[in-house]
Structures are given as structure tokens and as C-alpha cells.
Image (tube, rainbow, N blue to C red; front, side, top):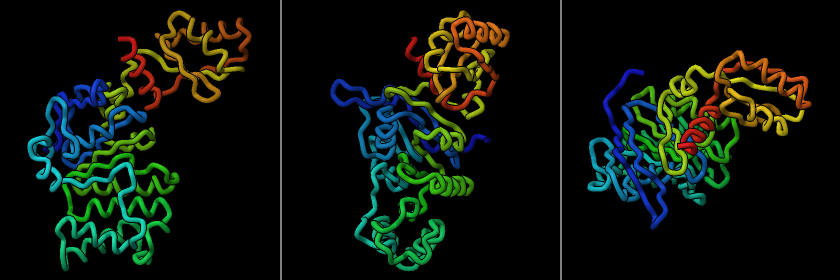
Length: 312
């Protein structure tokens, strides 16, 4: 992806709640039309970062700007340039689809024909045709999420912040929602999205990995997969894999191990170690063992960078 104008800037952005540091000196830039993903577990600092960028929460340190507006000095100016879909469902459940669209359109200053045109657009992109008079509380989760996205985009913001937008919806609904995100990006809208789903993060142009308030790594998916350098990642299938994990971890040249279901992922300093691993497992009673070199998944990368951070 070729660099475009920068629309979001964070420099040593921090937020503390008393003695607890929720976001610790985070720095990054996001470009126009980019789908930028924040990946991390609950409590990693993703939502706090988004709330600061949206002008909803004042930073404790550092600075951030959205569309050239400082988020601490000019929060209202920031809000005029953004759409925001919060982690908590923000629509009115006892209003209809149409009533929600008209309410949020009015809140963004839309009236008359412009509002009608944007209502029709939101209905179309959300696949809500025929459901305009349905109460939101009766909508399936995927339809409600697409309606919430449509409401956040009624005023055509150049930047939209989506905080775990697909939580609680089925895989097909998630796929359709991400198709909408990619369409927005193709039209020049910048999409900043937090998620804890690895498959969603892989659809982002770049991903920032967050853990315990810190930004541990940031790059394209291909770039992140290069964190292992010349080391080799192997998947090991053997009897009693959870018990075999300790045996594998003790072998010289094995630098990392993690359990993935009934298999073990191990990082080896070089590929010739595979035969040694197989022999050690057999000697410990974990035969037969099958080893296969695999490309690292984003989950492998995440486990690796967290381990590196904990060791420093």
C-alpha cells in the first residue's frame, strides 16, 4: 500500500487512572484510506486509546491529532471529522431502523434531502431494505451492527473508529461487515478498528499489537511474520501434546513453545533440529511425532512478541 496523507498521529500517547497505566507511551501514524488494526486481548489498552483519539478522554501524557486537530485542545473539532462505533451497542433498541437513522442524521446536522439520501445509502449498504420499520431490538446481530456502522457514517466522516465492532455476531455476519470496511477503505475512508480476532486483523493493511498498555509491534501482516528472522517455526503432532510441551521446551535450540489445541508450535534456531526434537520426544515416550515447518500465523507472532516483551 503506497503511503497517503497522514490523518491520525499519536506521539507517546499515555493515559493513567490513578496508579494504573492503561496506555503507556504509544506512538503511530495512520494514513488516508488505510484499514489500521489494533489487536490485543481485553485490557490491552485498545479502547482507551480510541477514546483519546475520539476526543472522549483526555491524555495523561503525549499528544495525538486527528485530521490536523489536537485531540486534547480541540476535541469538538475532532468529533466533526470522525465516525465512532463504540464497543457497547450505541443504537436505541426501542426505535425502528428508520428512526435511528433520522435521529443520528439530525445529530450530525443533516436535514431534508441530504438526510434522506444518506438514510437510503445506509439502508442499502447494511442490507436493511424492507426492515426500515423494524425495531432495532428485533434485528439479528449482524443487521444491527451494519446499522450502527451506517449511523456512524451518515455525515461522511473521513475517519471512522470501530471498537471491536463484530463482538457477539456470527462468522458470516463478521465477513459481511468486513466486506463493508474494505469498501469504505477503497473509497478513501480511513478505518481504525480494534479487534481480538486474528482473522479480522489479517484483513487490515497494518496491525499494531497491544499488550498491557504497550504497543509491542506494528507492521503489515507480511512484515509482522518476519519477526522470527532466520528461526524456523514447526508444528508438532504427537501423543499427549500438553505433557510433551515441557520436553520440547528443554531441548537446546528450541527458543519458544506454545500449545495450539492438540499440537505444539515450536521455534527452532535452525531446521536441522527437527530430527533431534523427534528423537527426544520418542525417548520421553511421546512417539510417533510428526513435525512440519509452517509459516507463522498472526497468533504465533503475537505470542512471540509478548514473550519478547516479558523477557526484557
